[in-house]
Image 1: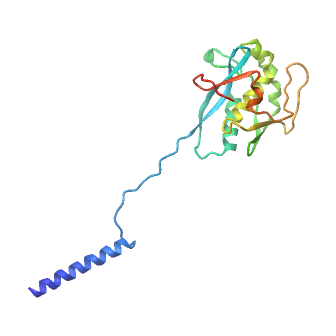
Image 2: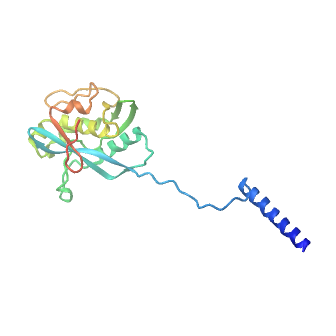
Image 3: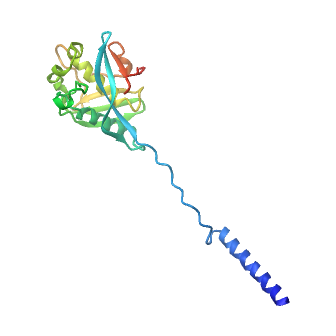
Length: 213
């Protein structure tokens, strides 16, 4: 009888030692693995001229083709990707896209560089952007055609500033500020923010609801 009691005590001691070892990081209890929730990808929006109302040109936010950016993308990444999607949007209408919105961006424009500093965004574009007059005939309203340079600049500024809506956008062409000559000139001699377009433009989200700027 005494031997059985001693064996029982020894067994309890062994179990206690195993428990201490497990709690101190030895074997340890098996725990279910947990996974951090995946952060949703961020939608990429570009701005296109959708309508003319009360003498103002309405820009509509539209998702670019396959438009999603990684959740951890930097503002610089978002600006570059947004502009690339804007510039890839077809400028010439065709039967397959008869209901799509127009654009004042000429074909072949490339993003040469993007720099983001606080509330100041600088985008360097290729010289193809200066050929905006070649596509103004595809704009559906005379107000858009007569102000195609302003429509082009507004599209660039609204699209580039979507990740940081209060930012100003300095557009460079081949690394330089410029102003074209003649009627309907393109002026990139100074930065522009969304508020600079209040006099002649409206902005809408994807559902057509007003965007305040």
